[in-house]
Length: 175
Image (cartoon, rainbow, N blue to C red; front, side, top):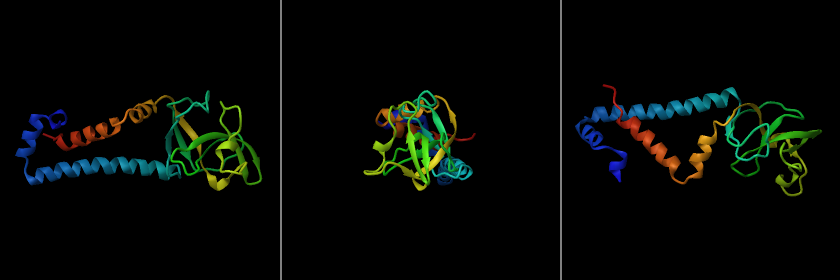
């Protein structure tokens, strides 16, 4: 199994490397991981949002957003007509348009849905509060999220890709 991931050449190279060279490779791999994390945090700070990017999973906001579009989210004030993001104990956020506001309460609906979102709200509730609306949509990239959908649809692909990238970083040396 290991021979499918690491070539004989890589194994020979790894055996010839000194401890110091192995540590340098490990530090380079750590830099890659930390760099990616820092870019994510930069977007989080700039957009004032813990999850600044989401992928559209359903067609409830069609034709405005299609399945596979990437949405940029920011924690900003919103009004009727804005696309809001909310979630209730689920790890997947819901992106729907605010259609009514009454006081500090809001009603949402997917553009492609026949009914409003009352059925998605906690039992006995007919509205959202401002605290439950996590962010609004400030931009999007069409179709770019299909990669994410494909990776998460096929079990194990995500981990195989992460392992391949990690091993690539570990075994790629600057000559």
